Image (cartoon, rainbow, N blue to C red; front, side, top):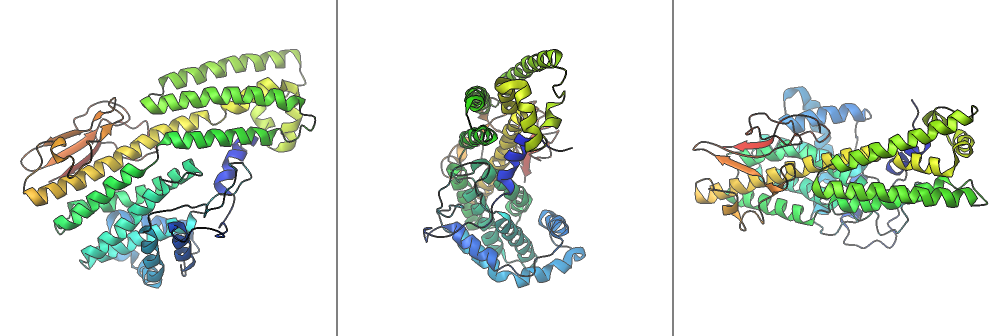
Length: 433
């Protein structure tokens, strides 16, 4: 089934563009080094999906003989991986490479494919170093991927896109980092460095509120693009007034839902908007039998969209188009908080490991680790932003969030941690000994 025109316009920002010009870009930009590293990639598999699938298995579980055919790829790309690690050490990162442009459906977007492949190769190499007991080299590769994630989460342009790519990188790195934290070979120095890096990454990340501001501007530009056919401007003026008013309502609701991590008011309002809109649409259809009955089908391409718009008028079309995608933004909020909790639990685990290596015992509480190991005790967005829970016994510890179902299962029912599984039951949990 084809997507409505407005959905196509939204998707265009994710697939348009390519490598941006480096002209006038500052020399201390990590993105430039990442770009150089991507240009050094050699003999990447033509079957990209097959490569990603096999690479993810190795990254998740470590090397086995079944995937030894991937090892030559690592050896051929050691120079690219080394350059990637150099880029990760640069503090500043601007993936627009200094180019200023408006957030419009036809605008350029950064090309993240190369840097994600570099992160994937670095993780594969780290897993290989684990087999060789080269633990400093393992940590160097993992820290490079962690810093890339931090760079992505600090972008001030195309914020939501950058954060979504950051989620991909975080998902790849989660299991290897979790395994490393639990390794008996990990020293206090290594654990402390990892813990400090993770705390710094969390402090510097932009929230989803910044992404929503950026997306609101893009929605405004998308509305303008839809009205490019109206040379006289009469339809456009009425459409844009109604479109912007509805978008302002929707994004105000989204920001409130994000601040509270509570979608109930948002969902209720969107349902009300939709019910009123459907009544108006049916009234139009009742008095004009020539009106196309399926607006979505009529918005499959620009030409059919231009035919249907005059039938329904600017106000109905504005409210209809403004509402498209609202529910997806709501899902992004839930996914964002799952990812944030995953990262917070992981950095708590690193802090506990550091504390135990130094003190030869587990901390009595998470608060006992502040500020030397944790800057603050992370909040659980699924429990009214109260502190995440920490339970210890003589042999093991557990740190957990209530998870998206908001039910305290005492860490006995465990959520998979997959950011897209917002309806899944169970707590988000990390355990250790």
